Image 1: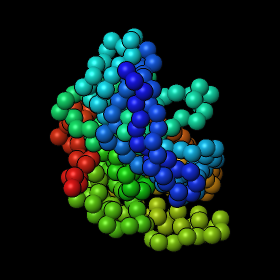
Image 2: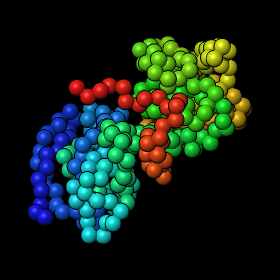
Image 3: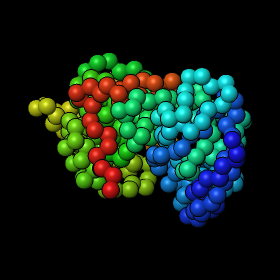
Image 4: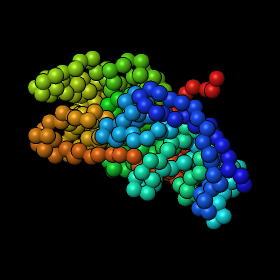
Length: 313
């Protein structure tokens, strides 16, 4: 095969995107060549676009963004036997920073990717759902890290994309009650109307500055959560809190799950966590979840919310 040329979206500096042409060589013996047909953009991509960095991760050279992708295999390397041209795959990115220090994303028309990280999808799973395997994997990894008992009460702080997907996985995992909190009422209305949560909490639009004010604000939000009614009764204390605050809302020996790269500096009342033996658990990306997510999407249970709500235009 001759070397192909593909169009790629390339970020050169904050808010400077260029459409460029890149060479796409033949796949290596252990690689697949994929036509990327659906790609998500997440919070990290927006940070890279706006600031050319994501927290402590600083971009060193022009970068192609992405956040979870799916596509169709065009060709396979000589050693690849488990996949063939025409297969639909979700792409998992597991290469180390040492091996590929300047790895590019998938916001381009085609890429070569290790075959072992190309996960075949059944034909009835759409490519758009395939692009959501990555963020759903983050949510499933959070569930696995939490290891909650069945019939738990879970608070999700933040009703954005990650919060909604985390709520969806918690629902599937037979939580008794899922409460979702946010500062935007329309997000909360969407979450409850579409089956992602049983109840919602509108968090006051305040930005406390001092340590004392932050702790007081957290206690205020905790009180709002405990007074919220779901399934005909007050929520009270919850088994686990997903996101980055909420020690005060957790019951004794509950868990606070810090998911992804949020606010760089968090105000957490450690003494309250220690007093109630609350575990604080970090969650970054995922591990060994792609096959389980694909199986879940292929055979969704009745309580699985629709994770794609907007048809293509």
